[in-house]
Structures are given as C-alpha cells and as structure tokens.
Image 1 (cartoon, one colour):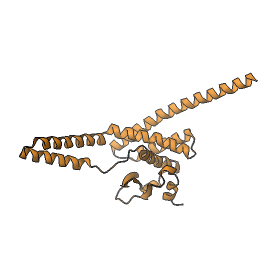
Image 2 (cartoon, one colour; image 1 turned 120 degrees about the horizontal axis):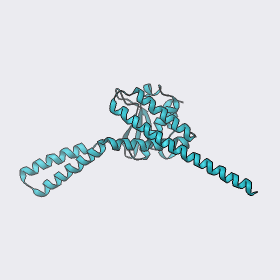
Image 3 (cartoon, helix red, strand yellow; image 1 turned 60 degrees about the horizontal axis):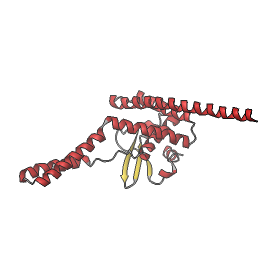
Image 4 (cartoon, helix red, strand yellow; image 1 turned 90 degrees about the horizontal axis):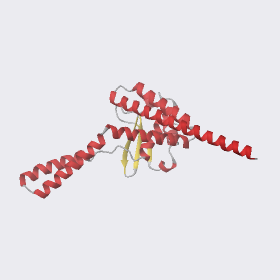
Length: 212
C-alpha cells in the first residue's frame, strides 16, 4: 500500500467521498496543507519526500490534525477579501469624483467589511485557536482509529516537537510551541479525568463487593 493509499484509509467515513489526498506539486511545499479544490471538495497535499522522515505515529496525528481542520470548517480559502477591498476602494474614489453619496457609502461599507475579514483571517490568535481546536479533534480521531488516549497525546506531542526542531521560521515555530503547550495542558486535564473515572469505578466495584 502506498503512503497516499494508507492515509486515505485513515479518513473518517464521513469525509471519504469529498476529501482527496495528493502529493504536493509546488516547489518547496509545506509538509502538509489543505486546499479547497471545488464545491464541497478539499485536497490534502503532502510533501512526500519530507513526510517519509517522520515516524508513522507522528504522520498519523499530523494528518488527523488537517482532517480536524476540515471538520471544524477551518479550511484556508482563496481570499475574496483583497479583491473586494480593491473594488470598494476604487469605487469610493470614483464616487468621490461623481459625488454620489449613496454609492460612496456602499463602497466604503464594502471596503470596511473586506478589511475586517482580512484582519480576522490574518489574526495570529485566531489561527492559533483554530490549530488548537484541530489538535483536539485529531486526538478524538486517533481514538476512533484505535489509539489509547495517552498514546494519541504522546504521538501528537512527539510530532509537534519534531516540527519545532525542523522549523526555521520563528513565527511558525512559535505557533508549534504554543500548540505543544496547549496540548500538555489538555493531556493533564485528560489524565486527571481518567484518574477520577478509575477511582469512581473502583469505588463502585468495592461497594458491590461489600454489598454482597
């Protein structure tokens, strides 16, 4: 089985018909990325040459992170905002010349909305939150495919550590570091919940024994 076929087998059933996996064709591509290729169709693109350098468990969790983005509707999309901003600003300048107040307000409104959308889209805090939510979904998906909770956290944590070591760009490295810190906190919470659940199960078992 090729690596692309293997990854295809890791897609949840609800995503199999409209999520496609392909080798990246760009020059110097990212390790793994998403691209919307049509109406209700998404492609996961992988730099297979670099991808092979990662352990299989790390690959799996990085792949499920991208699937998590898809399921959370956090797919990067081609920006219409820049075009709308240019149209709005061009229209505003034109309406200043012809002095049509209503059209000027509409043009400024379009520019303002497009500018706001660009701000939200490029906001680093928003991108980080989307990535953290996708990490949480990746843990859930790993458990669906047979990982234990501790192994899922361990595999994703190892993948993030490897990305931190291999990433030269400071901004990207900081995002990976922040994701790793959020993952550690989530793992501690999950460990605590598991301990409480085990303690509760033991308590119930003891009550049953003494009740007999």
